[in-house]
Image (cartoon, rainbow, N blue to C red; front, side, top):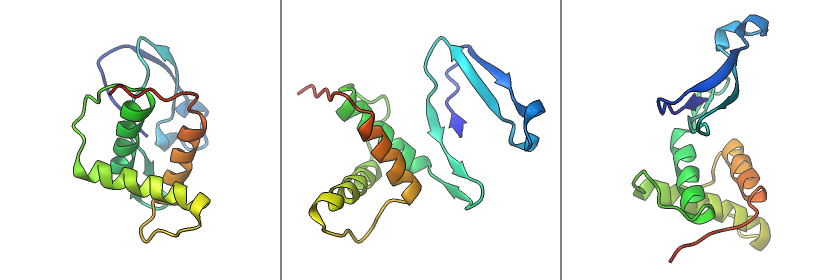
Length: 124
């Protein structure tokens, strides 16, 4: 996981001493002045980086769930990835299969984001 360094204090406990995998440099974040912003997730076993998927989901969450203006410009690629995520989710209800699909891990993250959403704010 890559976390955005926004130059504010984030308190963490270094878990490396207690970990079976100390080379992973594990940290347990306890709190801070601002929320943590995840910028990237790597799957070490599969050697896969999910940065562009994470960015697209953040754009979707910021604009359509929180009803805020994104601080990052929305790219054509963000739109394509959001469309793929929505198509994959909608195919569960329509039975229509999509040609290109998001990785299973990303689809699970997106589904979890949607399930945890209690309200949607859209400012027109």
